[in-house]
Image (cartoon, rainbow, N blue to C red; front, side, top):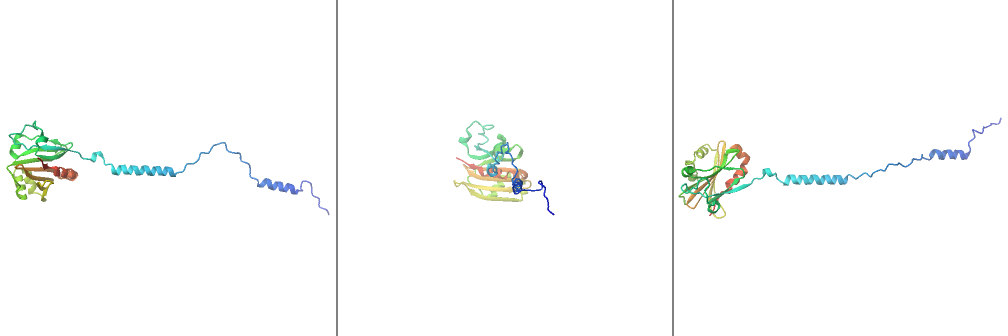
Length: 241
């Protein structure tokens, strides 16, 4: 019996090939009307950030705070006798007639020394920290000394006219002393007294038939805070002329 195929069931070779081609061809996508911006590389950004951080670090580590910088003024002392003392400060040119100098921190105040005080204990000048008046530096002088006595004798003689120094030495944890010479060969005795609640640096020398003693005193809390500054004041004292 013959098999009869309908016209619709017959698939010609050309139709099959066309169907295969249609199935494999990807659909057409029209071009987008939006413009795509290029994505920048992150490398320049990272380089910029690295350079910025490095510059910030350099500025932080190499530029000290202005608040931490100490500035000083030079004080010119005349060591005039009580009889020739020109009142509060006098009218003469102190720089021209100075016998000694030392540094004073900016912001410290001068305590004016009276003629009576100058005549009794030889105090010639004094400056103090207004935030803590017992943190101070001052100078005393005595006439009639051609040269320094032994170190222990000098310190004891200074204490005889200074009750506070007597008490400090009597209760001190340690008392250090040494001899130093400056570039001109001038001899200085240097003392450091670590007492109960107080620290003192003393520098003594003889010149022009006078003995000069420069003191830097501070309570222990201020000493611990300002030691570098206080040692600078101590070392700055010297005779001139």
